[in-house]
Image (cartoon, rainbow, N blue to C red):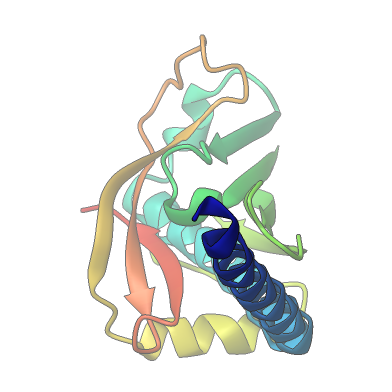
Length: 195
């Protein structure tokens, strides 16, 4: 009796195996076909985070122009910890004091779990004595992105992300807090200073 059920059982196993192989082929084909659009999305997300980080720092500087004097170093390196960012995005900021000017370099990179890791870097200058977010982007495309971000009305996704020193054991002399916002119908995220 057991001999008669064995071929039927083998047929079921063969069918399940064939379905799993077919599903795997379809899944990997889909991933390969979608990679260009996934990569384009990752690049655009990096660009938006890098520029919105510069804009957030400019706005924070306009609110408190003396905050950079509280840092003893001439060049300050700050990060937003990827563990606190949605999707593990990494944001790094370099601020170099130069008299009343502040030279900024912002980099945003895909999280560790990205299928197609990307990075975007933009630089800008801020006049710390202007009293308004007076930022000059070194790249025209960054300026265009900043204008689009400024015109948008994003919704808050996550509050209270803190720019910290790369050595997490050290405390920043001033709190620089940002909020993550949805952007473009929740396709992307940007950061803005917390108020």
